[in-house]
Amino acid sequence: MAKQNMLKFNIQNVKYSTGSSVEDLTYATSLSLESNYEETNIYGDGEVILVLANDQGKTATLGVVDIDNGFEKDLGRLIEIDGGALAEVQQHGSIPVDIYYEVEAFDAGQKIVIKNWLFNVTVGKATESYDQTTDVVNFGTFEYPLTISGSKLKAATGSDDFVDANGNTVKVYRATTYPGDADYETFGDSVPELKAKA
Image (cartoon, rainbow, N blue to C red; front, side, top):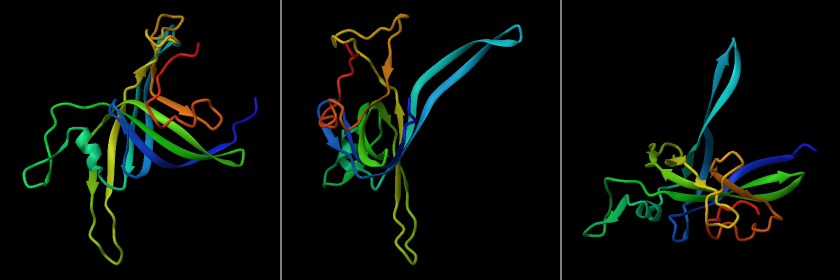
């Protein structure tokens, strides 16, 4: 098998869905993803006899150019009060979303766009940072902490949960499509149905 010759860069076209529709999110500046995964070694007779995996999804940080008021309203964090002002209000719960984004890549010398969905994402409150204007304008920075818990893969029929040969259900944290895939053109239009291949 030949080595993969791909270099990924950039982030663009971030969207989100609360389940009813897909909405644009403000312009992204960065996305960092980290797996929430641990392994525990079980020892016997002085050597490792078993490795237990604990996969709890991913955490991430999404950098944006500004706080998106529409996004904040959909998350129940921002409401309009008398007089028209927008008020940031106390949260008593969390509304999970699915998040779509694109990255670019050079694949064997050809520039392509790779499309991705992150599933069952809890979005923490954004951090905001402002600096005074000096000889240049110092723009603010805004970052959302994300916890990607994943959604269960369905069987090929789409009704029951997929169960592997060992009786385990399987969560999907991220789905990715590349140019030439059957669902590529419309992948960002709606949250994909997560079904096992027949």
